[in-house]
Amino acid sequence: MKERITAINRTLFELETGILMFGAVCQAFVFLVRDKAGYSAGLWMGILIAAVSAVHMWWSLDRALDLPQRQAVKTMSAHNIGRYVFIVAAFALIAISGKADPLAAFLGIMGLKASAYMHFLTQKISTKIYGEEILPPLIEEPADGQET
Image (cartoon, rainbow, N blue to C red; front, side, top):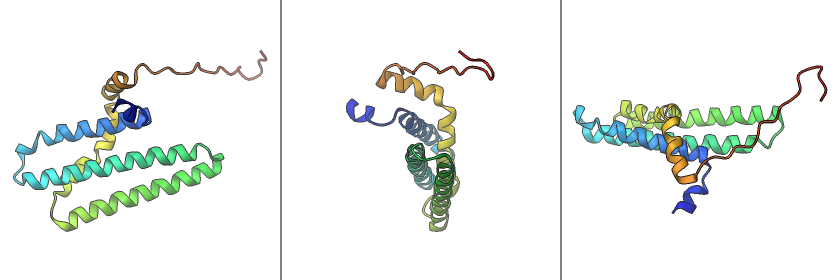
């Protein structure tokens, strides 16, 4: 199992872990709402949308890094628009269906943002699984006009 997890990009793993942690915390508050099933369904649909969006974000960034700058900007813009259209369409389907709470779905979708803010927690989990991250040394460029 550890080999399968460590094959996943570390940053993506941390983001997905944060999304799931956010979902679990929000699920703990199910007792505060009347429609518990609708809240739970909406929340976890939103969490699923956030998780799929995170994978798409990682995938599109990974592909764009191999492109020239102008093409990368155009490609990332197209992928961002596509991702937003997917999120809005999925959210609209949830709202129209009436089977799940759309506000809970929105809360789940916000798990993507909350996960980014929980990086300090998810990084600790990631370190336990992946080990310490070894970063390459920074490349120092000489200041303008100075030769080395």
